[in-house]
Image (cartoon, rainbow, N blue to C red; front, side, top):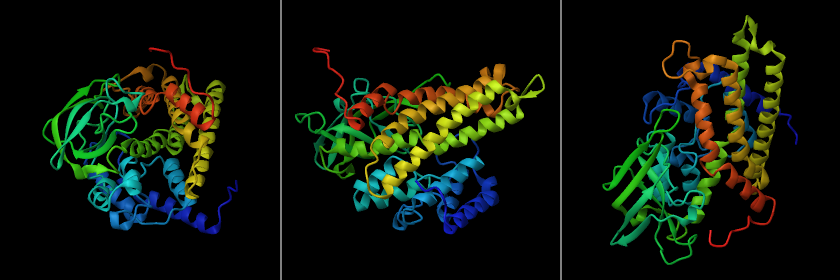
Length: 395
């Protein structure tokens, strides 16, 4: 792999650095914004205008419209991470790529522009009480009545459902078909009559996850993405992007820089944490893992730019990235000592309690989006070609 940059890319890097220096005061802070918050929308609009968000989304769908360029995309992510400035996004990083690949022209024009601008938020209706790891066994059903699907059933662990404008949802439309072949992928507003959202309190103190109940919910048959009964194929396209986002190596790099800064400023008995050999050793181990994920991410981008399937490099991103993020949050908590166990509004709280929040949230993300155990099975079976895990008769 040649990691040298030509003059063109060095000039582009300087362009990104200047933009960040001139506009970083406009970026939202580390605390997650509420959907539709004006500062987030203004920042996103500015980033799209300069090609630092929704960069390769076609201009006719509200994006910047640039040709894919692996090195420029990497430079943008790298410099925003280095500056610890919130980067832009392509809207919902699961749905927008899915619609670009598989959506109708009408769906692309209706949903992509407001989504990438941050004006329309989405939640994902996949998991159910009886079908989490075995998603294909889902039971929420949709029956055709005239020009509508009528949906009945339940979803659980639905992130952001209480505040989302829209849902992309898996439902069973072909009850007699084999379980992977009877599923359809639907889009619909969350204020549709018959939808009941009940928040679930989690150990962070927030209620980010929700139960969602559907009682005779009517949505147009035109809301389907792909063909009826082929939702499993569409869902896997979405999951591919979701798992890559959960283990984003640039986010890990940004966190690493935050820990370095923490160690340079926090002291114990008048001595900087950075000057403690034990902490430096632990930091270097995390840096090695962070860099390995960073270069693995470049491998994935290289394959994607060539239209190739990345294989093993892509499969490990979610598993290794989420575990690394949790280990970095754990180190930050340890570095803070007794301050690391504070929460809420203590006057001694550091950085608004972001590390305490991340530690709890990241533990959940090792489970969410496919548990670590399921990820290992998938890596073994699909990427390494190992035999499938034995099934116990009658289990």
